Image (cartoon, rainbow, N blue to C red; front, side, top):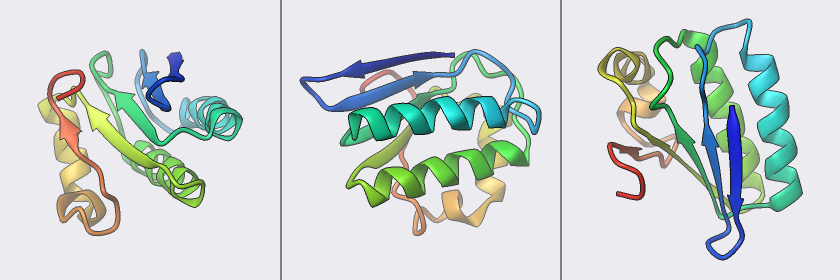
Amino acid sequence: MHIEYMNEDKQLFVQITEEIDHHTTEKIRGRVDYEIQRHMPKKVIFDFDNVSFMDSAGIGMIIGRYKLASMLGGKVEIMNVKPNIRKIFEMSRNFKNNKYMRTRMLTKKGK
């Protein structure tokens, strides 16, 4: 996992480089929570370009980071989601209707 904070834009960019399942979510959760609390970004962007697999534990991990970022006045975006992982997100009504989370599934960095 690679995390970069861009101070001028107050954005926290999280590039996940592994599968997201119940074994890896604790590590991701701890590291991202630390960085969100450290920088208090306006936007947390998760890049899923290198993620080939995600189970329902990944949904919970993203929702938890959304709640933390929201409490601190930030937003969450998800980008570069592969079709098989997009289906996991779409199965969750929180992502499908975008009512619970104001999350955009971006296809290209910054767009």
